[in-house]
Amino acid sequence: MVEPSSSPQDAFQAETPAQKRALSYSNTIYQLFVSVMNEKLPADRIVGEYFRTHKKHGSKDRRVIRESLFALFRWWGWLKKIHTSEQQDTSWFACLSLVAELEAHKWPQFSDAWREFANQSPEFNLSPATQALVSVSDRCAYLNQQFANISFCDTELLPEWFWLLAEVDNSDKQAIIEAMCSRPPIWGRAQTITQQQLIASLANDEITAVANEYFDDAVSLGHKSVNFNAITAYQRGELEIQDLGSQVIGQICAPKADEKWWDTCSGAGGKTLQLRSLMLRQGSSAQGSIVSSDIRRKPLEELTKRAKRAGFNGITTAPWKSEALPVNANAFDGVLVDAPCSCTGTWRRNPDMRWLDDQSVVTDKHALQLDILTRSANAVKSQGQLVYATCSLSPIENEQVVNAFLAANTEFELQTLTHPFTGEQTQMLSIWPHEADTDGMFVAKMKKH
Ligand SMILES: C[S@@+](CC[C@H](N)C(=O)[O-])C[C@H]1O[C@@H](n2cnc3c(N)ncnc32)[C@H](O)[C@@H]1O
Image (cartoon, rainbow, N blue to C red; front, side, top):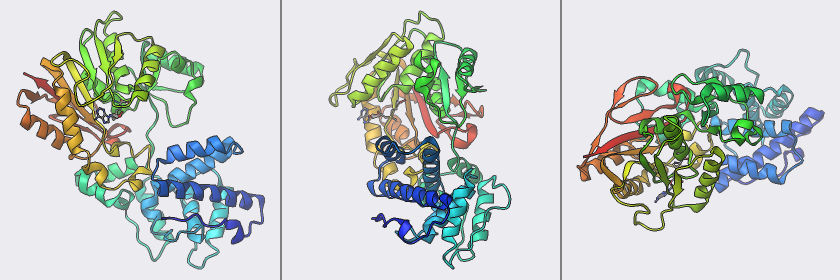
């Protein structure tokens, strides 16, 4: 258990206004860091709650606090070798100044102050980077040069158990580390209007969107945080935020305009909306329909709101109330099982999760995933499709679930898929984050005889 230490104001003398603010930021970042680590709750949630209840912070403050905190988690695999105490001491200030260097943060007055506090200890003699740190290897070299007694290597940026459970090809390792230590852009999806109409509408709201080369309804919205509630296209349901990797799932389902689909783990309906949008793009009078289910009711209510915002008909909800199917058996042309999983594929957006979870997060859901897939499969009609997806990068939650299912359900046969980004043919498809700057995803498609 990490204890919040007393305020560093007691131990470190701040002489300039910048040093005073640097100490105050440090205090807040430390409290948030300790809360995330101790409560094992997503940093996003803890930070959101903190800013809701501490209105005194302006937008610049929020930026320094948020970016520094997330950077600490992104580089924690290295920084934990430096900050081994449970105090806001010189090693903590060393970490704050280092993340500002590693991510080229644009607040030198604070990172200089943090470095000065760190260098009060004879243990540290930190200096700023003398050239741009572009790659993870550049950053690793910078750290190795700053610390004579500690050695750092790239693979430490992800927990050891990830490497054991993800089965990454050696040739892909470096690219995966690079991707996992950077943020993907915000990806959007056009619905009810075309990609170009969406780009024009966003431009009116001073947002630059770039057409995606793989899917004609996908756009990249860059890295800037945006209040989408104030954006016209979003208010009209013409824009949904959906990672490009997640969009692969709907594209693999490829529902026809008049088909009946069941989204068995729909959550708030990211993929339900995509499926309906894909149907309607084939003709505005698409006769198809989608039933969306989840064990949680709240997300289903959110889904209903989002469908209304887009003016989508043809979507109904049917919550799971027991083990029994909430829909008719043998009734659907397509069934999508977007199963609960470890979410290791979303670590780029939530860098804290790689240090909060342990390997049980990957191993403990296999039975549940197989059970949901097996029960959901009863709803597929003859010649219908069954799609299994996760945002996990581990075969335990992916290939092993599908193989166990196929062994026990011989009326289902795996379909060959084309990787949308590489063009490769494959039996089961893993989307790796470095391939197209996305979250990681897995999908397999089966056909019922
Ligand atoms: C990966 S998330 C779904 C994300 C959603 N499809 C989307 O695109 O936004 C998995 C969902 O499965 C639901 N879930 C968990 N256990 C379940 C179960 N036994 N049966 C059905 N759904 C379950 C969770 O509530 C969660 O919403």
